[in-house]
Length: 102
Image 1 (cartoon, rainbow, N blue to C red):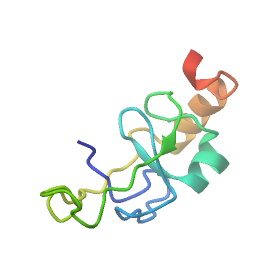
Image 2 (image 1 turned 90 degrees about the horizontal axis):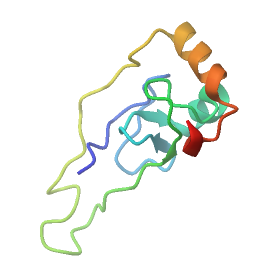
Image 3 (image 1 turned 60 degrees about the vertical axis):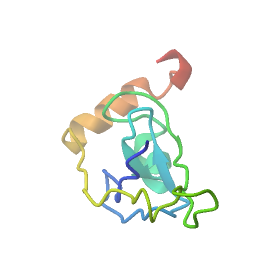
């Protein structure tokens, strides 16, 4: 089950569980859409993969026990694993490679 992390690892913007601008990589590194497009160019600075929109966990339990009330989003804020300069160099170096080929 996804953690649904609460913030962008780049700019620290709040990304609540219902945020439509939250993006994740395959390891669930979480960034806002603006940072993914403007700074990272669809390259996760942690793993090198691409991003997709983070799913929104249902607020209402339309099936018993399945909702944010029963499986709340994480409240643990996550920071970028690398310094920004090296992260940008990394992203710049692989952004021309399609995510499926990285």
